[in-house]
Amino acid sequence: MPVVNFSDVFFSYTTKPLLAHLSFSCGPAERLGIVGPNGAGKTTILRLARGELRPERGSVTGLSQPLATASARTVGGVLDTATSEHLGLQQRFDALNTEIAEDSSPRLAEEYDDILSRMTALDVWSLDAQVATVLAGLGLAGVERETDVDTLSPGQRGRLELAALIIGRPASLVLDEPTNHLDAQGVDFLAETLLGWNGPVLMVSHDRAFLDRVATGILDLDTAAWEALAVADGQRWRNAVYRSRGNYSDYLAAKADARATHAELHERQQAEKHRLTQHQRDSGVVGHAAFTPRSEIRAAKKFYADRAQKVSTRRRSDDEKRLERLEAVEVRKPREDTTDFPLPPASPGSGGVAIDVRDAHVPGRLRPVSVQVSAGEKLLITGANGSGKSTMLNRIAQRHAATCLPQSLPRRGDVPEEIWEEGIGEVGQGFVHPKYWATPVPELSDGNQRRVQLALAAAAHPDILLVDEPTNYLDLDAIEALEASLAAWDGTLVVATHDRWLIDNWAGRRLRLA
Image (cartoon, rainbow, N blue to C red; front, side, top):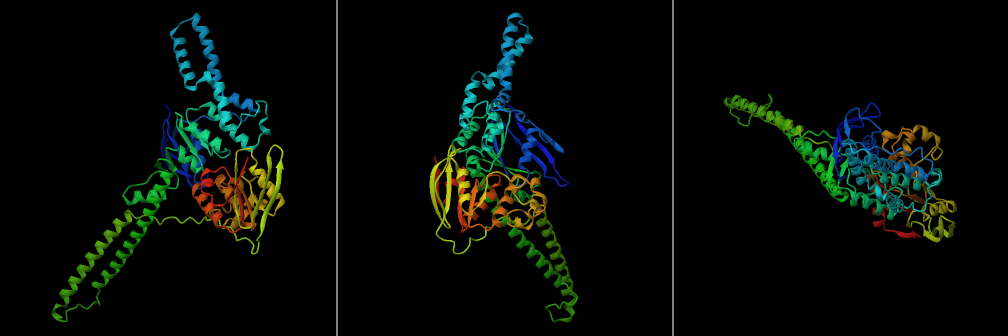
């Protein structure tokens, strides 16, 4: 069985390494979720695993071979590409049956056994049923094979790419935000598919409920707390990731314990360092030339002074040794995350009904629906793919002075040209790390582009904020911070999402679209 293995991998896009000493393995039936801050290298790891990038140092083995579906113009063309190995094996198998009838050589018999084994592993005989099941599970059963890929919605294209990947059954499965365009039914189908997957699965996902259900381990790129525990134990830390066992809830508990221990270690070590330094300074006074011994007998002055000098020297030497031992296991100060997504207060006196939508209806996209939302109220919109969640947000935005944050990442023209070309600048304070303020938007990671969108939405000082899939693209710490900020905001908030974790913990009103 295949194993994806990273061995002491280094990679960088600039002169500064993005990944250094990255080592881990993902074996059969293991499903590892990669988490970490935006820009830490999560997607880069997936690209290395697919062979799209090559490490500068170290090695990556057990690569996943991506499907070349980009040139396919129709849905059928994408599916044909996904099933090309199946069909090729079937054709060769049929040909071998004919050849063996005329020539029973060991060479043909060996090839026959190999082809039969591969066909069995791919379950070629039920290929049509497999394709139908995957398409139905991902909400694509009604899409015709002749449909032009360019006419599909972004969500449909994302689900088609995922369907092709699952149908192709690569030896190792590499997934980047696989639940982004899935409704609850689609997430359930994907989770059950992965739980039954025999090969290695490597995935980046912000979907906490999905990771909780599927992951057998978490690779954390934010290693500060784990590194501190290792250093305090006298160990040398040499890895870009920390592997936590279990699902996402297990990881959260372990990370919280590690962070708390890190903070406690730092505080205790600094207190001890201060005590030793102060004691070292005080010890220096004991043997000072101007020091007057306690005894008033003149004949004993030299004796006491010499003894005091020896005591002082010994104490300072002992303190120096203790300080050296402490410095060998001294941990860095815990990082303080300055990202808190500060939303400005709503305008004073903006009471009454903030949103009033009556019989909103878009044939084929949104069934008739009416809703009123009071000023300062929070509304969660849920529903299956195609039920009209995004359409409903657009209708509200058209009829009210609302700031709308779409689920898609920004394109040229969606943000001011100056920001697109030169970076978010101080407008990103609290949303984007200062080191990215001067980075053009197209050069940012997906997560940081999302942060730019949030910063610009906050800069508009909205009284009504509409957010489509707020947790898309953000790292998990940022998601927690954003949810806390939205919950505390005093403006009118409407959120549309598939995020099961967010749905389960929502405290406001709910509207489910049919």
